[in-house]
Image (cartoon, rainbow over all chains, first blue to last red; front, side):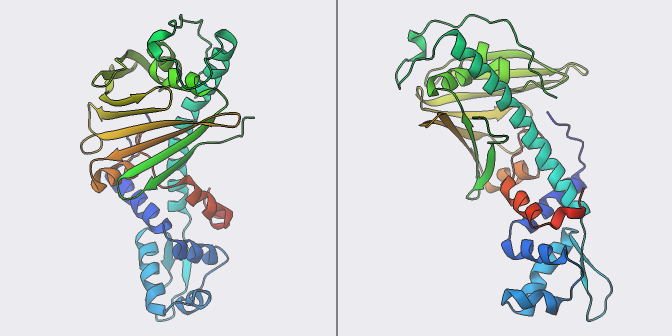
Length: 144
Length: 167
């Protein structure tokens, strides 16, 4: 169990981040901004999209805290904010690590099972008909 | 034949999550590892600071399973249980799952499929939640079973250099 320490606020922020990332246009906008600030007009250019459409995407990115704009002026250059991305990446990484650790232990167990009793090939063998596996000495395989 | 990372996670529709992982082992062995308590406890949910306390499996349609872990420091017991709906050894198991402390609304239905493939077995686990809201709760959850958007999404993003400054 990864700790449930994230506050409601940060959970909301994560959802907003994931939602913002779910769209290819928005990812492309982020990719563009990773090269430096750009105005809405400049952002709209490569996309063959209307400015309002781009603005809508920008609003979602801004709500997620992924993009910020300098001022309330007309030509506000947008800038990439990297921190929420870092948080989202960290969360995914933790979740993934948890399961990957499970599966790596399973890999090791499956290896061990091969050397013990050759697994029955083919799609038969109801569990009941097989001899119970005796408990094997534990191989400490803990990964933290 | 062990690639560094073979685990994939992705949402499917508005209330399902799909997890896949390849194993270099025969299907029957993977099936056993998922269904025999003495094997299950060796790999599933071995978290630092937590111990298995109960691992019961009544592997028949209508039979139930119950797994419990205890947090050593606090004595808190995390339990999950469910009922087997479909069993086709060694290819498929459908069961319900419900955590004692619901961290997402309701329960889920888990479909585990084991497919033979060159060099081993492909595991495909589909979790279907009761509502889109429940899936959203899982996606937003920092807890261990909260699966999320495809990891590929971020990977792609990282490849697009965006997270260059995100560390």
